[in-house]
Length: 129
Length: 194
Image (cartoon, rainbow over all chains, first blue to last red; front, side, top):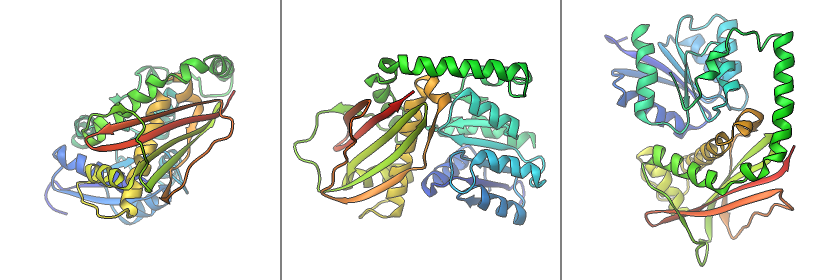
């Protein structure tokens, strides 16, 4: 691992959205940045078993395993302990936010979003770690 | 801390509302009242301005383009791309996005920074995600919808000379929009509301 390298896991069933999130992270100043990708919660768990990451960004609505169950499984399987998780999702209701927080999310970004919003939500979490 | 979401979402943590007992009874009653009001709020739910605002928001924030309502084109392109995201819960129906092939490739290009010469999987993925965000933004305009209606994963259809038809919808909002030389259409169709 290079000096101050940030390792991020992006979990979203849309490959286009994963690229958009990666671009937003780079525009936020996370550099050097290593990105791991997963298309659903199951794949995300497999990445976490094999790789060490500093930040996780996850969608909620995904096939196979959704983002909230992914969060619960991270805890249940004691993976990525202490790593901040930020949800990036179209779901914006209070209930969804509460559920995400209770499952362990440290941030919540609603789609559509700007790169500035990603920077504001993610940088404090990365620097605090 | 949580952009686009009311701060009261986290203010209520720790009040036991999600545990069995007194709090959960209050939540159930609140949901029952919300369900009644959803049926009685069909006019508010079907406000066409919410769709316009959603399109402006999604295209403005994700593509950096301004969209305006447009009249229906004289003839639709033969080859088109259609994405569908379903609604389920107190309201059932779908959000349908449709555009010609060129508009779809232009949209995907603005999302990804790539260039496309034909409708490949990345273009389809991008259009599916646009429809996903439109559906989420639209339902987020009405709090009762945001809390009580879920979204399906997007389905994307490509081809020529096809039309979509929904039988006897509760309500339907169908608008055309334009940015630059590209035109697309978005339909919100509701086939059931409780």
